[in-house]
Length: 184
Image (cartoon, rainbow, N blue to C red):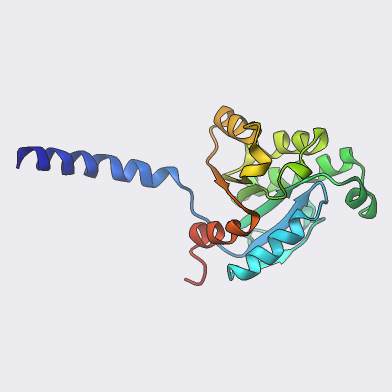
């Protein structure tokens, strides 16, 4: 009996601590890109399936951000073709997302960073963008195939960021439901 009491006492002490480690997010959401790859469009589909209230603005700038938005999901993946189509170079994209995320932090908007296109969307520029945005994140979501070298695990550990690693891109839908408690 005494062992059971001690066990439950320990649980009561630690459960609130563990509960605080996992962030929660509110809607409405803005989905944007860091690198202009197709990943942001994929996130749009996943957010639709998760019943999130969102706008899709791959080129949103800090000036267009209002405190009506509660969360930004920024999907990292550099595409030279996507950047070219948007009329941006890498430095302009870095400037845009730095300004956007700094403004988000300033006005209390939470930030989710996602890398959901796997190893095929990793590379020098994508990694530079990740190193730029992860320090400002409240949550990082990555696919296992995009983290085979533990790049995101190490980066999140160094920055003390909460990370969720999923097996497949489609699994992100359930993660969104979990963190947003969609439909409630």
